[in-house]
Image (cartoon, rainbow, N blue to C red; front, side, top):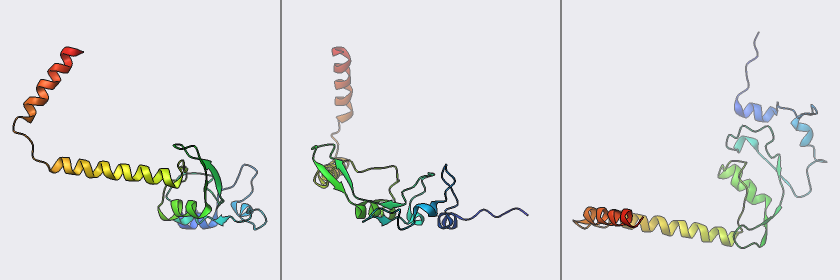
Length: 142
């Protein structure tokens, strides 16, 4: 008789995959193996990621900001929020500190607002003509 394949939540609860050494994932979740201050990951809440090595717990990580170069801590709570609540893929890592991330988000919001305003404005009756003339000038200068 053929065994029925477990559903996704069942498979994640059973942790049926093993490591190269043949140890079951449950071996990694023993209390003595989890680092102090770590938060246990709930794999059922992750977005699907087709990975054999999802994070079993979250620990604080020291990072360097891509924009300002300052050191910042990507906290375990923040990682848990990213992966389990926002369902961001597990392969994504934080690259900006909170202040630089806020600046980038505000710049994107301002750009979206500007583009929405531009879409609402009335066009000049000869706007298409002016675009065609400017394209011709660019071709001549090139």
